[in-house]
Image (cartoon, rainbow, N blue to C red; front, side):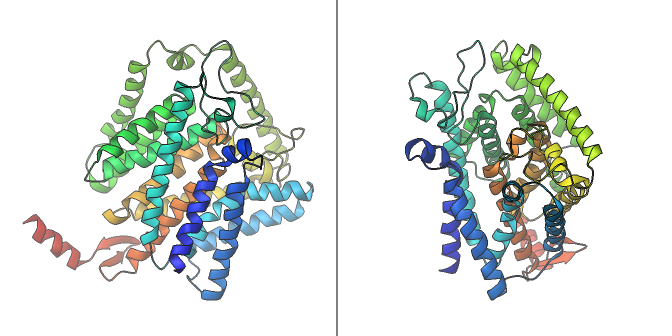
Length: 434
């Protein structure tokens, strides 16, 4: 009963992450409401479980995260920005990352429900990607309430009749982020699982096409990064491919995209950018220079929490795109360094333990997504929006749960910080091979 309740709470959270646009357009409530309510409830419920039922002990991961949280709240206290803006800034940053701790607490004893939650996420990814394709293909026939969230105009390109998808979760780049996460999901599912069913193949094609029709150059670069990272990790852990072939896989993705869409508006965005794209690049360059100057001027405490993120006051915004710069501007260099050290530690820890087939999927997903989305977040902070962060950190929590499970199993032994098969497992494998 206890684990079932946790599962249903997370299902509500996942659904809430992607129905905000429908709630805004057809009910009139804030689009953040469907995800915010279950997120708040799950968070407080998880810490109640931790405090009163002592589900797990403090680990090095949670200790490092605690250091990060303390450093953030020190900046929060000394910051002179209005209290409401500081609270919203904390919400946009800390509250979503905390989901990995919540996942770890609620599923630390059993992980059977995590597998079903991952499957549900796969279905949600596919549905959002498919709906985005429908928006592009049938956009001329759909009402505006099914194309964009109330209060925003239809996304496209000046001088063209191109309709860019939103799938009613935010702007086009936010949709591209979800489509890219769907691509990671089905790419891993296709190449890690021995049985490749038809649905996985179709979903992989749908996800890739959804990324392409977002017309986001960063998302296309993200697809290449994902393919290359996957093959590098696979080479390191299994020796199936060489490092040079991993790079060739990435080049192949680029070649296929440019071959299929040669002469189209998509390839022209790379070769001959339109005036609006060039203008956007110039603005972004100027904002980046301004952000660097402000970081140098205010290195310790930044310019104020809540001044640069999604809920920022327009008069105080220094840079509109760039998660890295927004982080350093809001919290200062020290907190920024602690954050990235924490990310490096998490990636390294999960990566070191990718060697048991039962934990491949969440661990592969976590490592590849953490690296890919932080790289893309430097280009455009919309790739690090709330829904992506919640899903991303859920997978991190799921990875830690599985690592703990197998480290604590009698069938596995820990050697030099890595999970290794016990002699019993090795003997079983030898008998199968014979």
